[in-house]
Structure formats: C-alpha cells, structure tokens
Image (cartoon, rainbow, N blue to C red; front, top):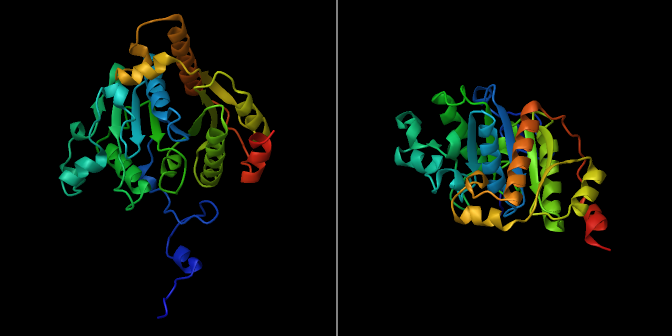
Length: 304
C-alpha cells in the first residue's frame, strides 16, 4: 500500500505566518491578544528547578513595591500559584470545559483568584497528555483576560512556564513577554536546558518583542558553572538564591517566603527578591546571547 505524504513545504505554505525560527510552523500571535502596557516577564528553566517558587516570590516582591501583579501558571500540573492561593485552583481549561468552551459564559471569579498580598493568580493548565497544544492554552487564557479587561489595570504579568522548551506551544508566552528570565542551578543538566531556552528566545525575538533579561541562579551555593556558561554565550546572572531549608519548608507550608518566620538567612533572600523586582521594574538592557551546540556544552562543562 502506498502512503501519501505531504511535503513540509506544502504544509508550511498553508500556515499564514511570518518566519518564526528555523523549521517552525507555529501560527503567529493574534495582534488583538497583545497584553497592553504591563511589563511582562516569562520565567523558564529545567523542570523541577524551582520556577514556581521563584515566580511566586518574585510576584510578591513586585506587590511589596506597590505594583499590581498577575501571575499566570502555564503547566498542566497547575501548581504555580499554590503558595500564593494556598490551594490548587481550577485551570482555565477546566472551567472552559464546564461551559463547553463558550467563554462568554464565564465570570472573572471562575478563573482568577486573589493570592497573598493581592497578587492575582491564573492557572492556564494544559491539554490532555498526547493531545492539543500548550500554545492554544496560553492563547485562550490571554483572550479571556482581555475580554474581561483584567490586563488594563495590571502593572506586571509573570508567566511561569513548564520546564524545558520542547515545542512552539510552550514557547507561546515568549510572544507576549518583554523579557525572558531563566532559572537555573549550578549543574550540567540545568545549564543544558538553559541553552535550549536561549535558542528558543533567539528564534522568537526575530518577530516578537521578547528579549533575554538574564539568569536567576537557584539552589546554588556556588555559580562557577553558570558563570562559565554565561561568559561563553553572553548572559549574566541577575540574582542568586542559595539552597536553604526554609525555601523547601515554605512549599510544605503553602506559603511564600515573605510569610515565613523571620531569620537572618530568610531576610537576605527576601531582600534579594525585592532587589531583583526593583531592577526588573526599572528596566534591564536586553542581552544578545548565542546558544551553543550540544557538543560545545559537553566540551565546556561536561568533561574535565
């Protein structure tokens, strides 16, 4: 039996879009879904590196500076805002499903929840495993927020995005962001993932406003490997958070670090978050970084 195949060139011609990175067939951002005047940050990093903890505490830090903050979790696990709301809130996809995807039937309180210190929280969720696309989920979330005028009074939007960048769908928040921040630890696997994220941001920056903001070193007593990589590709570390037990305990207590009992080490971490939030609010120069080939990373970090 002969199986008919469709040339890749023909497939691409059916998708109306500007070039969006080599080999990409992702549909471009609907111009009507632009977020507006808020400063938008997309937080990426290897799975399990502490993106949600970092995002939530950064959101609180912005709120402590008097900013109106919206955090959007973009992960099927939907626990980005767990420490802010003290629970796993329903996702946008969950609530859309209850109204057969008739978004006009939804109320704001169906999908937006107020967290600690006034941070507004949304969990986009994700498509069922093996089906759908994360880009659709992000697009529907931003569409709902726009329809309900929730972005007009927001100063800062933080997208907390699922792990490593593995497809155009989960790179979709980069279409909305001003700056992409990469959370990493001082180890090979985290830096390998960071390199892929740099490549994704480089591709998106050809057609969207997103630029690299910098690196957040997390759970890192030292930063020698991060520094070596940064020097090679053109990145810089914006903040560093050590591997402290109080950070682990904050997740267990469903609390942000700004709600934990004061101690000298915790006070230092809070100060670092406030400093990072202020520097991001004041504005950071975009970084131009060139990702390495896989073999180059192994040569740089993987062998003695």
